[in-house]
Length: 198
Ligand code: HEC
Image (cartoon, rainbow, N blue to C red; front, side, top):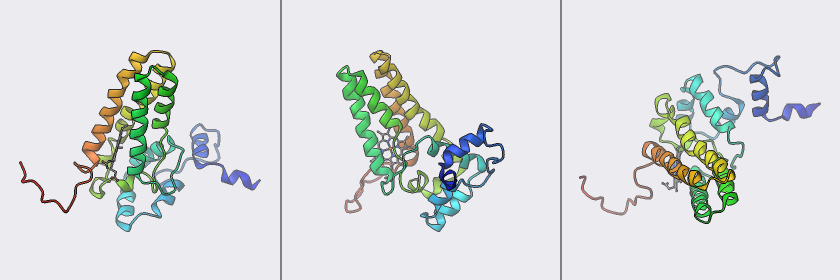
């Protein structure tokens, strides 16, 4: 059956990891088919940076992508970020309104955000696309999305004070990642005379 060939790569990879597809061992070192596909839209400079990542870091990025099965066709990271902010605000609204269902739903939507066009990497500064800088991504992911999922569970268990406590854990993750990877001030204008350095 041809159909089998089109089975999601992620599923195949997880089956292989579980030893279910013993005849098909996981490919070591090389970028996954999905990553190779993403790299097709990268500039040569970006592609070089990604190729230079260690097999471990490549695997980490692939895991982060695999944890987010929704793929954007054209949406950029910034657009997804603003969606994520809207979910965060919805969670706060739901907690303030003592609405555990809405809080849990929004928290799961936040954790299940789309992966932007080309994956996460092209939206980071080129000089930070290296093992050392990208190595913090799993910690960021745990802070933001791990806490969002805990918030959803707490809300579903009817423990709204505990759910509320995870809001700050989530935002701590947002801020940490922005301090590392985002330009210091969003939306700076080149048409303004910059203030003298302090
Ligand atoms: C993995 C790192 C990372 C995490 C975690 C992260 N962000 Fe971002 N965020 C970025 C980067 C990088 C940009 C800049 C994207 C661009 O301009 O292309 C950004 C941009 C934004 C923007 C758009 C405004 C701007 O500065 O360009 C908003 C809003 C935003 N993030 C909100 C959030 C919220 C809310 C969270 C937590 C729930 C969060 N982000 C978590 C990396 C991250």
